[in-house]
Length: 180
Image 1: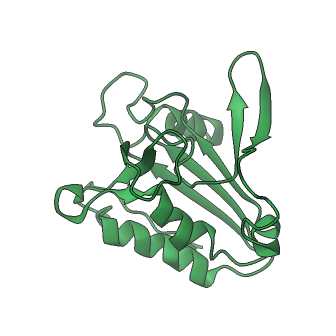
Image 2: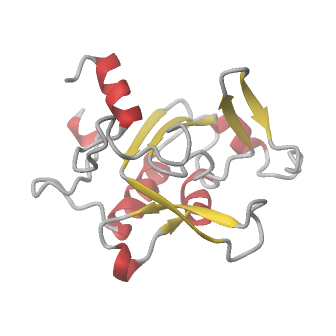
């Protein structure tokens, strides 16, 4: 149903993907999702890294989404996405996120990550996470899964032109769905 779909795009037709509109979209998903729902999120745009401001990152950097108004509103840190979207998601909701941007592998700060490095393909838990106290049973039954671009440079289209509406991962996803 159209009422269940929110599109943010800087194409002059849809609502702009500003910091506020992106975070409002994630908050809306949390507010409207109930046990048994399946939720899909697709972010295709710019991603980045900022120096970690609270000491929770092993590599010293927060991964970010970069909204169109980042110069005055700021980037959206992984900590904000976790606290606004991941942590409050209702128990029993299945969430799949396709994050097609640079530095997107840990942009939701999930306690595990999918690894496909050519030698190995598996879901790996972050051994530094206290899984017993991480989020409680609501998180584990929410079933939040994220797929992300490979490497640090996903976000530009396969042709290297970053004016397209989606990056490599988004193009592949669209091809699978038959959307040219």
